Image (tube, rainbow, N blue to C red; front, top):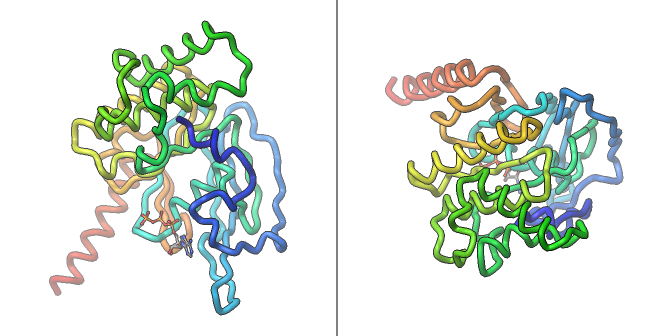
Length: 269
Ligand SMILES: Nc1ncnc2c1ncn2[C@@H]1O[C@H](COP(=O)(O)OP(=O)(O)OP(=O)(O)O)[C@@H](O)[C@H]1O
């Protein structure tokens, strides 16, 4: 099931971050259209929370990013640097405090834990769940479900009860739910964190296949796993709520490895 179906709303109160009092009253949020070749564009995005003491605490500061259509980009950075918050803003699940944002629609958010998302009794029912709103015939629903499952390599599992699937298979079903809804932008939050290598690469392959099969889906993938950069068209690296580096996968990998060496040297000195 695509959770955007459940949380398809501009109301952040339904989301896990609902307890954050935002400063939306101060927001200066301009919206503009993304051009044909750009799927995601954010300029100077800021997001702050109000602490219990009534002070403003910045979570994101001046984040700007631009992702061409049809590409897979990755977002990396240390724990707590703001990756998930930025992803939720791009998904429309949180509103930025200020900045401008445009993301092609429909867009879908896939969560780290597939058990929060794949909840219908069978694979078929789960992928079909979000299609109710489109007024499709039964044949059209069946065709969309089967095409989406094919793109993620899960078509042979169509009748399977979801509780019999591995974590990676559930992630692929969650992605299929988004594809069935014809999403243009996939926002993927640490999909592979809990997966072994086989499931990890199954999920990466599913995303790559989905992008190449459609030619117009764009994905932003949050990860801690450096080896996944090999599959990226480009990547962003964040620290302390800011995007501090962007570039090709190899260049971001080099940048992170240099950072890691410097930490190791500090520990050993
Ligand atoms: N509900 C909340 N209340 C207060 N602060 C929050 C809340 N959710 C997130 N934060 C803070 O916002 C910052 C960014 O969190 P976020 O989850 O975006 O980081 P992240 O880079 O995705 O981290 P991780 O890699 O650990 O998942 C962190 O300092 C976090 O503590």
